Length: 332
Image 1 (cartoon, rainbow, N blue to C red):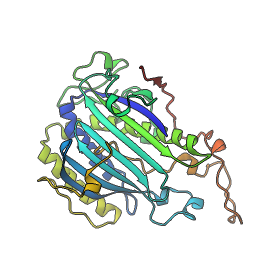
Image 2: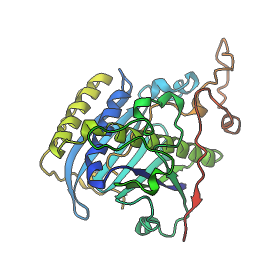
Image 3: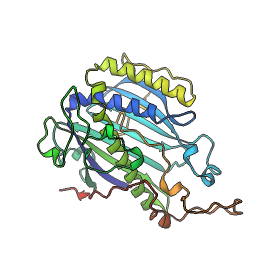
Image 4: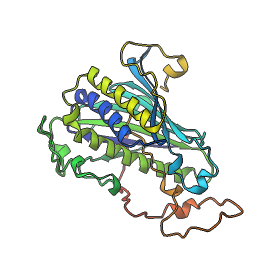
Protein backbone atom coordinates (compact mmCIF):
# COMPACT_ATOMS: atom_id res chain seq x y z
CA UNK A 1 0.00 0.00 0.00
CA UNK A 2 1.28 3.46 -0.94
CA UNK A 3 -0.38 6.56 0.56
CA UNK A 4 0.04 10.15 -0.63
CA UNK A 5 -1.78 13.40 0.04
CA UNK A 6 -2.25 15.79 -2.88
CA UNK A 7 -3.15 19.47 -2.52
CA UNK A 8 -4.48 21.32 -5.58
CA UNK A 9 -5.29 25.02 -5.28
CA UNK A 10 -7.73 26.79 -7.59
CA UNK A 11 -8.78 30.47 -8.05
CA UNK A 12 -12.33 29.63 -6.97
CA UNK A 13 -14.37 29.28 -3.80
CA UNK A 14 -15.55 25.95 -2.40
CA UNK A 15 -19.17 26.98 -3.07
CA UNK A 16 -18.37 27.78 -6.71
CA UNK A 17 -16.49 24.52 -7.26
CA UNK A 18 -19.50 22.46 -6.14
CA UNK A 19 -20.96 23.20 -9.58
CA UNK A 20 -17.63 23.24 -11.41
CA UNK A 21 -16.49 19.74 -10.45
CA UNK A 22 -19.77 18.16 -11.58
CA UNK A 23 -19.65 20.01 -14.91
CA UNK A 24 -15.99 19.17 -15.53
CA UNK A 25 -16.40 15.43 -14.87
CA UNK A 26 -19.37 15.08 -17.20
CA UNK A 27 -17.82 17.06 -20.05
CA UNK A 28 -14.42 15.38 -19.77
CA UNK A 29 -15.94 11.88 -19.71
CA UNK A 30 -17.94 12.65 -22.86
CA UNK A 31 -14.91 14.03 -24.70
CA UNK A 32 -12.78 11.00 -23.82
CA UNK A 33 -15.36 8.38 -24.85
CA UNK A 34 -15.79 6.71 -28.23
CA UNK A 35 -17.61 3.73 -29.70
CA UNK A 36 -17.00 0.79 -27.34
CA UNK A 37 -14.48 2.73 -25.26
CA UNK A 38 -14.76 5.27 -22.49
CA UNK A 39 -16.91 5.92 -19.43
CA UNK A 40 -20.28 4.20 -19.02
CA UNK A 41 -22.54 5.61 -16.29
CA UNK A 42 -24.21 2.66 -14.56
CA UNK A 43 -25.88 4.51 -11.69
CA UNK A 44 -26.24 8.12 -10.58
CA UNK A 45 -28.75 8.64 -7.79
CA UNK A 46 -29.34 10.80 -4.72
CA UNK A 47 -29.23 9.04 -1.38
CA UNK A 48 -29.20 9.73 2.33
CA UNK A 49 -26.37 8.57 4.57
CA UNK A 50 -27.02 8.30 8.32
CA UNK A 51 -23.68 9.96 9.16
CA UNK A 52 -22.95 12.34 6.26
CA UNK A 53 -26.51 13.30 5.35
CA UNK A 54 -27.77 13.85 1.81
CA UNK A 55 -25.41 12.99 -1.02
CA UNK A 56 -25.07 11.50 -4.49
CA UNK A 57 -23.93 7.99 -5.37
CA UNK A 58 -22.45 7.19 -8.79
CA UNK A 59 -21.12 4.02 -10.36
CA UNK A 60 -19.22 4.07 -13.64
CA UNK A 61 -17.32 1.63 -15.81
CA UNK A 62 -14.23 2.76 -17.71
CA UNK A 63 -13.63 0.43 -20.66
CA UNK A 64 -9.98 -0.09 -21.56
CA UNK A 65 -9.62 -3.24 -23.69
CA UNK A 66 -8.49 -1.66 -26.97
CA UNK A 67 -5.91 0.40 -25.07
CA UNK A 68 -4.02 -2.77 -24.13
CA UNK A 69 -1.17 -4.22 -26.22
CA UNK A 70 -1.82 -7.40 -28.21
CA UNK A 71 -0.16 -9.75 -25.70
CA UNK A 72 -2.36 -8.40 -22.90
CA UNK A 73 -5.55 -8.66 -24.95
CA UNK A 74 -4.75 -12.34 -25.45
CA UNK A 75 -5.00 -13.07 -21.72
CA UNK A 76 -7.68 -10.67 -20.46
CA UNK A 77 -11.44 -10.87 -21.02
CA UNK A 78 -12.79 -9.08 -24.08
CA UNK A 79 -14.78 -6.73 -21.86
CA UNK A 80 -12.12 -5.19 -19.63
CA UNK A 81 -13.05 -2.26 -17.44
CA UNK A 82 -12.29 -0.33 -14.27
CA UNK A 83 -15.21 0.27 -11.90
CA UNK A 84 -15.57 3.63 -10.18
CA UNK A 85 -17.87 3.98 -7.18
CA UNK A 86 -18.24 7.44 -5.71
CA UNK A 87 -20.04 8.96 -2.74
CA UNK A 88 -20.45 12.74 -2.86
CA UNK A 89 -21.15 14.50 0.44
CA UNK A 90 -19.63 17.75 -0.81
CA UNK A 91 -17.37 19.22 0.51
CA UNK A 92 -16.31 15.67 1.49
CA UNK A 93 -16.15 12.88 -1.10
CA UNK A 94 -15.02 9.27 -1.38
CA UNK A 95 -14.08 7.53 -4.63
CA UNK A 96 -12.97 3.93 -5.15
CA UNK A 97 -11.57 2.24 -8.25
CA UNK A 98 -11.37 -1.53 -8.72
CA UNK A 99 -10.41 -3.61 -11.74
CA UNK A 100 -12.42 -6.45 -13.27
CA UNK A 101 -9.24 -8.36 -14.14
CA UNK A 102 -6.99 -7.48 -11.19
CA UNK A 103 -8.90 -8.23 -7.97
CA UNK A 104 -5.88 -7.29 -5.82
CA UNK A 105 -5.69 -3.79 -7.30
CA UNK A 106 -7.57 -0.79 -5.90
CA UNK A 107 -7.41 3.00 -5.57
CA UNK A 108 -9.14 4.77 -2.68
CA UNK A 109 -9.47 8.58 -2.71
CA UNK A 110 -10.84 10.75 0.07
CA UNK A 111 -11.30 14.42 -0.79
CA UNK A 112 -11.98 17.51 1.32
CA UNK A 113 -12.37 21.06 0.05
CA UNK A 114 -11.49 24.20 2.01
CA UNK A 115 -11.16 27.91 1.27
CA UNK A 116 -7.40 28.24 1.86
CA UNK A 117 -4.15 27.81 -0.07
CA UNK A 118 -3.35 24.29 1.12
CA UNK A 119 -2.18 25.28 4.58
CA UNK A 120 -4.21 22.79 6.66
CA UNK A 121 -1.76 20.08 7.74
CA UNK A 122 -4.28 18.30 9.96
CA UNK A 123 -7.23 18.02 7.59
CA UNK A 124 -7.01 14.20 7.45
CA UNK A 125 -6.12 13.61 11.09
CA UNK A 126 -9.35 11.70 11.72
CA UNK A 127 -8.77 9.45 8.67
CA UNK A 128 -5.01 8.91 8.63
CA UNK A 129 -3.42 10.64 11.63
CA UNK A 130 -0.91 7.87 12.35
CA UNK A 131 -0.27 6.80 8.75
CA UNK A 132 2.97 7.84 7.09
CA UNK A 133 2.42 9.71 3.84
CA UNK A 134 3.93 12.25 1.48
CA UNK A 135 2.33 15.62 0.83
CA UNK A 136 2.49 16.80 -2.80
CA UNK A 137 1.39 20.22 -4.02
CA UNK A 138 0.04 20.42 -7.59
CA UNK A 139 0.16 23.81 -9.35
CA UNK A 140 -2.48 24.04 -12.12
CA UNK A 141 -0.65 26.96 -13.74
CA UNK A 142 3.01 25.98 -13.63
CA UNK A 143 3.26 22.18 -13.48
CA UNK A 144 3.89 20.43 -16.80
CA UNK A 145 1.32 18.01 -18.21
CA UNK A 146 1.79 15.27 -20.82
CA UNK A 147 2.09 16.98 -24.20
CA UNK A 148 -0.77 14.99 -25.75
CA UNK A 149 -3.20 16.57 -23.26
CA UNK A 150 -2.04 20.17 -23.64
CA UNK A 151 -4.45 22.78 -25.03
CA UNK A 152 -3.61 26.46 -24.96
CA UNK A 153 -7.28 27.29 -24.31
CA UNK A 154 -7.06 25.22 -21.10
CA UNK A 155 -3.76 26.67 -19.92
CA UNK A 156 -4.33 28.86 -16.82
CA UNK A 157 -1.27 30.92 -17.77
CA UNK A 158 -3.10 32.06 -20.95
CA UNK A 159 -6.80 31.65 -20.12
CA UNK A 160 -8.71 34.57 -18.58
CA UNK A 161 -12.34 34.24 -17.54
CA UNK A 162 -14.72 36.82 -19.02
CA UNK A 163 -17.32 36.27 -16.29
CA UNK A 164 -15.02 36.34 -13.26
CA UNK A 165 -11.98 38.28 -14.51
CA UNK A 166 -9.72 35.56 -13.09
CA UNK A 167 -6.92 33.89 -14.98
CA UNK A 168 -3.55 34.32 -16.65
CA UNK A 169 -2.01 32.88 -13.50
CA UNK A 170 1.70 33.42 -12.96
CA UNK A 171 4.41 31.77 -10.86
CA UNK A 172 3.58 32.24 -7.18
CA UNK A 173 -0.11 33.00 -7.83
CA UNK A 174 -1.16 30.91 -4.81
CA UNK A 175 0.58 33.30 -2.41
CA UNK A 176 -1.72 36.28 -2.97
CA UNK A 177 -4.65 35.33 -5.22
CA UNK A 178 -8.20 35.87 -3.98
CA UNK A 179 -10.39 33.91 -3.94
CA UNK A 180 -8.48 30.67 -3.47
CA UNK A 181 -9.51 27.16 -2.44
CA UNK A 182 -7.75 23.83 -2.09
CA UNK A 183 -8.72 20.28 -2.99
CA UNK A 184 -7.11 17.97 -0.43
CA UNK A 185 -6.94 14.39 -1.73
CA UNK A 186 -5.78 11.42 0.33
CA UNK A 187 -4.94 8.70 -2.22
CA UNK A 188 -4.26 5.06 -1.31
CA UNK A 189 -3.04 2.68 -4.03
CA UNK A 190 -2.92 -1.08 -3.44
CA UNK A 191 -1.49 -3.70 -5.77
CA UNK A 192 -0.92 -6.83 -3.71
CA UNK A 193 1.20 -8.85 -6.14
CA UNK A 194 4.60 -9.96 -4.91
CA UNK A 195 7.49 -8.63 -6.98
CA UNK A 196 5.45 -5.92 -8.70
CA UNK A 197 3.74 -4.14 -5.80
CA UNK A 198 6.13 -1.23 -5.21
CA UNK A 199 6.79 -0.52 -8.89
CA UNK A 200 3.12 -0.58 -9.90
CA UNK A 201 1.93 1.49 -6.92
CA UNK A 202 4.52 4.18 -7.66
CA UNK A 203 3.54 4.21 -11.32
CA UNK A 204 -0.19 4.50 -10.52
CA UNK A 205 0.49 7.52 -8.29
CA UNK A 206 2.25 9.23 -11.22
CA UNK A 207 -0.82 8.59 -13.37
CA UNK A 208 -3.17 9.83 -10.63
CA UNK A 209 -1.12 13.01 -10.27
CA UNK A 210 -1.42 13.77 -14.00
CA UNK A 211 -5.18 13.12 -13.91
CA UNK A 212 -5.64 15.48 -10.96
CA UNK A 213 -3.63 18.19 -12.71
CA UNK A 214 -5.54 17.90 -15.99
CA UNK A 215 -8.97 17.75 -14.37
CA UNK A 216 -8.48 20.79 -12.16
CA UNK A 217 -7.02 22.81 -15.06
CA UNK A 218 -10.11 22.01 -17.13
CA UNK A 219 -12.52 22.85 -14.30
CA UNK A 220 -11.06 26.37 -14.16
CA UNK A 221 -10.63 26.80 -17.93
CA UNK A 222 -14.33 25.94 -18.44
CA UNK A 223 -15.51 28.30 -15.66
CA UNK A 224 -17.40 30.59 -18.06
CA UNK A 225 -19.45 27.60 -19.22
CA UNK A 226 -20.66 26.60 -15.74
CA UNK A 227 -20.30 29.71 -13.56
CA UNK A 228 -23.95 30.88 -13.85
CA UNK A 229 -25.46 27.40 -13.53
CA UNK A 230 -27.70 26.40 -10.64
CA UNK A 231 -27.46 22.94 -9.06
CA UNK A 232 -30.61 21.84 -10.91
CA UNK A 233 -29.13 23.04 -14.20
CA UNK A 234 -25.81 21.26 -13.71
CA UNK A 235 -27.62 18.05 -12.71
CA UNK A 236 -29.67 18.27 -15.90
CA UNK A 237 -26.47 18.86 -17.89
CA UNK A 238 -24.93 15.88 -16.11
CA UNK A 239 -27.92 13.65 -16.90
CA UNK A 240 -28.08 14.63 -20.59
CA UNK A 241 -24.32 14.35 -21.06
CA UNK A 242 -24.15 10.95 -19.35
CA UNK A 243 -26.91 9.56 -21.57
CA UNK A 244 -25.15 10.95 -24.66
CA UNK A 245 -21.86 9.42 -23.47
CA UNK A 246 -23.43 6.00 -22.94
CA UNK A 247 -24.90 6.10 -26.45
CA UNK A 248 -21.54 7.20 -27.81
CA UNK A 249 -19.79 4.10 -26.45
CA UNK A 250 -22.69 1.85 -27.44
CA UNK A 251 -24.54 1.04 -24.22
CA UNK A 252 -28.17 1.55 -23.29
CA UNK A 253 -28.66 4.71 -21.20
CA UNK A 254 -29.34 3.96 -17.52
CA UNK A 255 -32.15 5.46 -15.55
CA UNK A 256 -30.50 8.52 -14.01
CA UNK A 257 -32.31 10.29 -11.20
CA UNK A 258 -31.53 13.91 -10.35
CA UNK A 259 -34.18 14.71 -7.76
CA UNK A 260 -35.55 13.25 -4.57
CA UNK A 261 -33.68 11.27 -1.94
CA UNK A 262 -33.44 7.50 -2.26
CA UNK A 263 -32.08 5.06 0.27
CA UNK A 264 -29.68 2.71 -1.47
CA UNK A 265 -29.02 -0.84 -0.25
CA UNK A 266 -26.65 -0.91 2.70
CA UNK A 267 -23.94 -2.58 0.60
CA UNK A 268 -23.86 0.53 -1.58
CA UNK A 269 -24.79 3.17 0.96
CA UNK A 270 -22.17 2.37 3.59
CA UNK A 271 -19.05 3.61 1.85
CA UNK A 272 -15.70 3.11 3.58
CA UNK A 273 -15.31 5.41 6.62
CA UNK A 274 -15.47 10.80 -3.06
CA UNK A 275 -18.07 11.53 -5.34
CA UNK A 276 -17.08 12.18 -8.51
CA UNK A 277 -13.36 12.72 -8.45
CA UNK A 278 -11.28 13.84 -11.36
CA UNK A 279 -11.75 11.48 -14.28
CA UNK A 280 -9.79 8.29 -14.78
CA UNK A 281 -7.69 8.29 -17.93
CA UNK A 282 -8.40 5.56 -20.48
CA UNK A 283 -4.81 5.51 -21.71
CA UNK A 284 -2.97 2.27 -21.06
CA UNK A 285 -0.05 2.38 -18.61
CA UNK A 286 3.33 2.77 -20.26
CA UNK A 287 4.53 -0.55 -18.84
CA UNK A 288 1.74 -2.28 -20.82
CA UNK A 289 2.58 -0.54 -24.08
CA UNK A 290 4.81 -1.87 -26.82
CA UNK A 291 7.77 0.51 -27.29
CA UNK A 292 7.71 2.18 -30.70
CA UNK A 293 11.40 1.52 -31.33
CA UNK A 294 11.12 -2.26 -30.81
CA UNK A 295 10.44 -4.27 -34.03
CA UNK A 296 7.37 -6.47 -33.91
CA UNK A 297 7.83 -10.23 -34.19
CA UNK A 298 6.25 -11.94 -37.18
CA UNK A 299 4.67 -14.62 -35.03
CA UNK A 300 3.71 -15.01 -31.41
CA UNK A 301 6.21 -16.81 -29.15
CA UNK A 302 5.53 -20.32 -27.90
CA UNK A 303 5.61 -19.05 -24.30
CA UNK A 304 4.07 -15.79 -23.16
CA UNK A 305 6.75 -13.66 -21.52
CA UNK A 306 5.66 -10.68 -19.47
CA UNK A 307 7.74 -7.50 -19.74
CA UNK A 308 10.40 -6.88 -17.11
CA UNK A 309 9.01 -4.02 -14.94
CA UNK A 310 12.53 -2.95 -13.95
CA UNK A 311 13.38 -2.27 -17.59
CA UNK A 312 9.98 -0.91 -18.61
CA UNK A 313 10.01 1.65 -15.83
CA UNK A 314 13.03 3.36 -17.42
CA UNK A 315 11.44 3.84 -20.85
CA UNK A 316 10.95 7.39 -22.03
CA UNK A 317 8.08 7.38 -24.51
CA UNK A 318 7.93 10.26 -26.98
CA UNK A 319 5.52 13.02 -26.12
CA UNK A 320 5.23 12.08 -22.45
CA UNK A 321 6.79 14.26 -19.79
CA UNK A 322 6.83 12.76 -16.33
CA UNK A 323 6.30 15.21 -13.52
CA UNK A 324 9.23 15.40 -11.15
CA UNK A 325 7.70 17.83 -8.67
CA UNK A 326 9.14 17.06 -5.26
CA UNK A 327 7.02 15.76 -2.43
CA UNK A 328 7.75 16.67 1.12
CA UNK A 329 7.17 14.43 4.16
CA UNK A 330 4.08 15.30 6.17
CA UNK A 331 4.87 17.38 9.22
CA UNK A 332 3.96 15.76 12.49
